[in-house]
Image 1 (cartoon, one colour):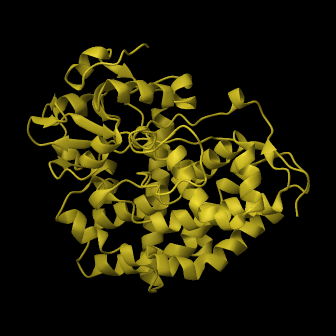
Image 2: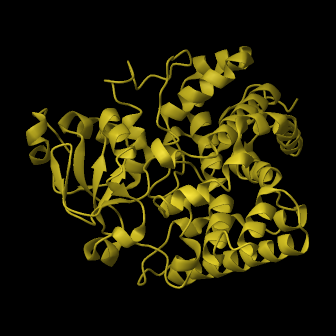
Length: 420
């Protein structure tokens, strides 16, 4: 696709209608497309694999404004019939039972629900737990082969974030051991006629039964952990049954899979920049700043979830009909040269670094402090204990996950000299 530079008021004319966000080349490297879209204008009509036509916001300033625009609501009830006809959302009754979490709510309901989770993820509490996170990371490294090769997804990245999450939210070990990572794929719903629909619905029912077991366990074994407090709030009538189940759903799925993916995108970025990898191994004190740059450079949250106007509205010079879906490309915003000099370069010294990897505004990720700590511990431990760590497959053979909104790899074959 070739896009010529055009004045902003003609940007939509310069792009095909709509631009398809599909295919392996796009998933492997969406940044050339995002660059051409940014140069043509801030808002573009795009086509998702499900057939949904949406409006994609690509520039940093436009993305920042959209994330803070109180005209744009997150509740699915605001979507119009055109969106609903093709959106691969959960079937009923599960949609009403599991999708009323924070990501799909607007004030004042969002404000009321969010206050139940923020205390569990404060930076001070996360720092107190960091030694435990280190123990978990070291135990996973201990279980890797003494010499490579190994798959760092199955051997580390798929397990570490969930083990950390279980500690933070108070998920007992016996229940943590029963969690099936395959259930996380329910955030990638398929349409009613898709051949994968039966397996998708089986995952959904399995996860729903698991959440019911978590609630029952916490009701029988009261404690002051986050899960215990949420169940107590439900019993006091401060949360509805659907809100409780949806918040647990969000914690279990959104609370760990993105960190798994971010570990993989960060490692791939370092493998592609061996000089930066060597420097980070030699200067572990650089980790906090390096993590911020790795989050900016290739974020696991590529796109935000749906937003909707409740009436026909102007979005940076583009008319968007009421109920059409508006998506913000965090990855495109984080590579905007108007905000980040030389944005396609991985620069571990970059400062300031006001990336949007965790979103912005009222839906800013409440678990950002936890994610930062996990990434610092994970990358620091892998680099320190696996000397010579390198990618053990061709760059073109990396298996990028087919998720619509996220970036990450399903496998990450690596080699290393030895396990320290």
